[in-house]
Length: 116
Image (cartoon, rainbow, N blue to C red; front, side):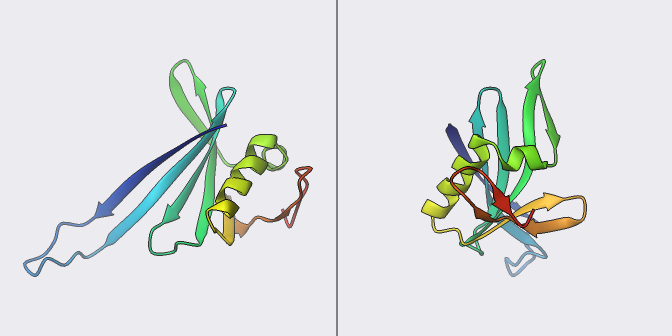
């Protein structure tokens, strides 16, 4: 598994006092193996929280994204990504669904995840 981390700052222009109307600072994690990736985001002001955003594949040089499905959650790549975040001290791990963010909990070593 290859892990890439990119740091981003997304903010409005500062006003005369140097303050922003909005300011987001976060890291995007990309866990890749065998032509597919899982993408997750962690905001720097919530150091113990991360959310998986998408399953990503490259097709003809373009990145295609979709929400994670139950098969993704059982994959060895996803289980390894969860273990990586736990080693970093992440205690709140969510995933984006059509209904919003939901927790990913109790991933067993065999890849079976409760609370899907």
